[in-house]
Length: 273
Image (cartoon, rainbow, N blue to C red; front, side, top):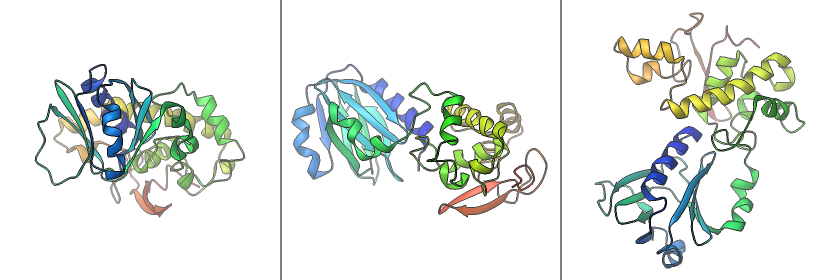
């Protein structure tokens, strides 16, 4: 599933293609939404925002299209009406005089009056979005010390979109590794200095992943490995998807476990319980 940085990147591309241009046509591939097509046609997109893994396409007539890519959703930007050859189902399309923004395979789509966006179940429950809101390490440290999150295992807490919106599987493993925190403990068991470090690394890695196309590894090391001919998969992360390979810091084989029904990777030496 795309995580927050990937959705923000997609939102940037959609916004570049459609913002400020009169809409020639809106198409919904879901029958329950087709009654909104005429409502949105003739308006223009004022902006494309994100809340974690959700995207909010805002129109000038006071309506917003909420979409969540889930596991298979994908945005594709093309010249107007130039559809790609694909077996995917087109679910949402915005066409203007130059470009078409096409959302394939997603089914979690709603059309909402602007005043109801904050009441949408996902939006209402979501925590802060690092890439669209002013979030500081102190704010995240305070959340980690709150009754709501303090006694949750790190392995499940970081996937809770109510804690921070947009963290998914790879970011979870990478945040814990760079913070030196075992996934098997709780914030309640974590020294204060490591809580602060985890807050800092959460912001740092989300922003780095957004700016550098999903790379969470040390950027200098990633560049060096790339120059050596390593594949993107080999240089992208510190520990994620590197089971059995040597930890980049201490050489201990990276461990893979199932946590919160998802695969998680960590170094048992660098991240002692």
